[in-house]
Length: 65
Image (tube, rainbow, N blue to C red; front, side, top):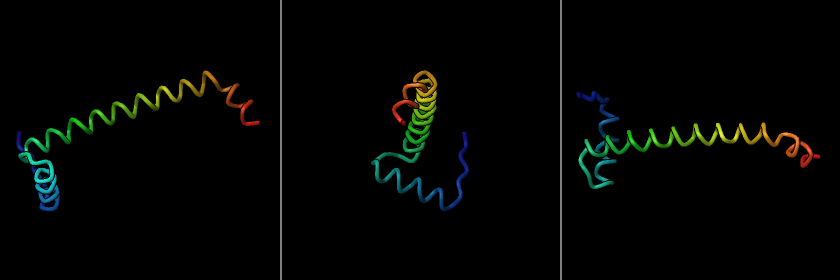
């Protein structure tokens, strides 16, 4: 796979790789994995929050009074 980056994105990737002490390839892989994990987690938390708000809507409403 070829990854094409703008000069500014290339500089950010280089800075990230240096900060992590890894190659740019490894920094890219880690960033992809971390972003994917965060997105899945945030989606799941949102779904569970919505379910809880629906399930306990009457209790939440009474607490607000």
